[in-house]
Length: 272
Image (cartoon, rainbow, N blue to C red; front, side):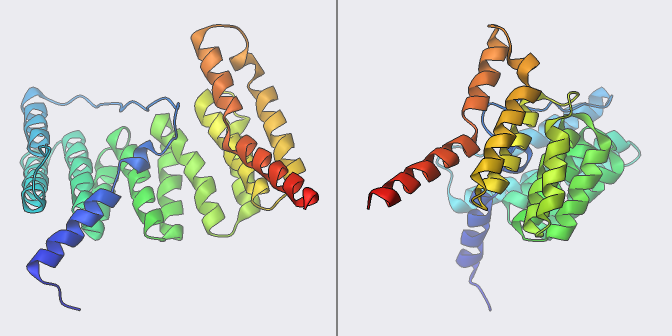
């Protein structure tokens, strides 16, 4: 099917609106934002990366065409930085990652994935791990579940904040593949791992509980919630700010809300 120039621009903008750092960020409310472990980069390269980044800023109220031109110019600038500092893996890795994000916003998915792969190959940690996580999110949105699983596993092996977050998404992707028991084992392992971030552990328990809610196994879901409270008891004890926030997050687990709604529906059904 052929598209007019204006139609292609419109489709690109729709892709840009659908694209988000969700992927990276997709950790949910209240979760601590992972920090990039930045490799040592020289002043000249850092200045070049920053200059390319400034080109990606889209002013509020920009037209569709203006937005596309800005993103195209910025992705080309990051490609130029990668070529100029080709001998410096850390620079190439960061430039490729940033370029992948922009290509995604432009709706050029295959090119975005290629850029993320390059970032993963060049920057083994930091932006490399984040690139693999981002690639997994893109592949999962495109329903390329086996590929997404591979990307998430690669990210998880690197560890660190983004690598640890990838473990959560391994479980989600296993669900997409119909491998529910494997997904549950993944979430159980993450939730009970005391070396992991507490917010991430709560998310893992919540996803685990929701997997039972969706099968209407309310008793099993309630046991998972009880396990979560027990596993995080030391983290939620006390009245310091972090403990209070974690208790609130435990109390706001999606599974609790779903269980409550299921109970309401059951009660209404009996009254009829």
